[in-house]
Image (cartoon, rainbow, N blue to C red; front, top):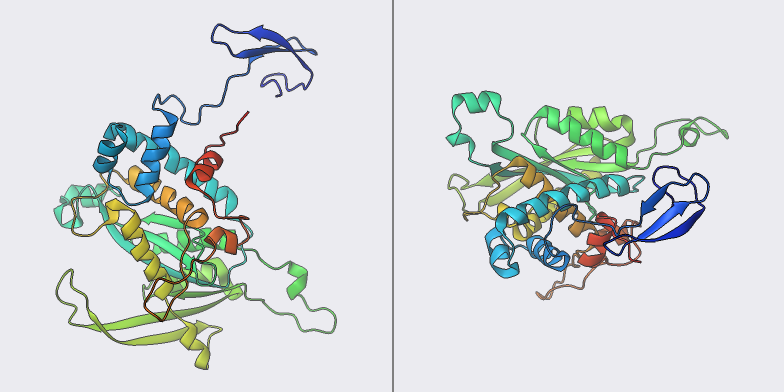
Amino acid sequence: MIAPTCKHERKTGKGKDRNGFQRYKCKDCGVSWTDRPAKPLGDMRVDLAKAKLALRMLVEGMSIRATERTAGINRNTICKLVVLFGTACRKFLDDRMHGLKLTHLQFDEQWTWVAKKNSRLTVDEKRERHDIGDQFIWTCVDEQTKLMPSFLIGKRSADNARRFMMDVSKRLARPAPHASDAHGFAKGGYRPIVRISTDGFPGYPEAVDLAFGPHAKYGVIIKEYRNANMIYTPSEMVGTKRTGIRGIEGRAQRSIGTSHVERLNGTQRVFMKRLNRLTLCFSKKLENLEAAFAMFAAYYNYCWQTRHADNSGKAGTKRPSAAMMAKLAGHVWSFDELFDEVLAVRSG
């Protein structure tokens, strides 16, 4: 270990402190320090094994109060754990999700709310508060690897569409400038790096053009329904309209779709209790929703295994995790591995 103040590497032992922790002294400048074990939960005094159990139950779909009863941890402490671990998960994903080589990204927005729905907001709250009322979880998933490279939580606006597209664009690997230049008797041109499919939200075309320009093939799918006037009832899809915006023409338009990201929406509603429909569960604070979803995103990418479709009606075989298929991990992580990596827990 290098002394945190002097940064010199030569050290010698200097006994132990009253708590039994080893002390060291720098041979070059004489600075002394104590080698205390890492505290992954900071100043929280909750038992580490109980904290892991509580977080594991939350990412498996249990509610805050059910986790409180099962793990024996106060619900306020559980909320603090979610914010601490979820914030660390967001930083972990930001550090890992770069230089990605993805083929077909499907984008969608999933509705939820914080504190209360828009119909319950006062006029002043609608004008002044962005952190309560209806919120949308902006997600995208790669059709081949099932990786979720990024997400954004906020209002369903063109500004958030631009912010989300720019964030996703920064995470993808781009070709070297020389690769698309005119050289070797070849004509120069732009090389697409990914294919993008979105629904008909009007803010997407401008956002895709701003973030990717000519480096992406882009298409829009609009699904047509009937008998869609009853809330919480399944509507009948009677047709789809696919439109190639850039680089997708003819029969290639049949590849435009958002089915995979819509299936991801179902996974999110199952494994995040606060997103379950027709229940008493919802987020009371935007900070809690963002942290809980970051926790789910890290668990989904590194620990969860989707399945191949099976025409026999039985559950298909498991795929590798999304991180494995995207070459970000060498094996399927356990939750303990994810916990240790996210909070930088080191043994010894």
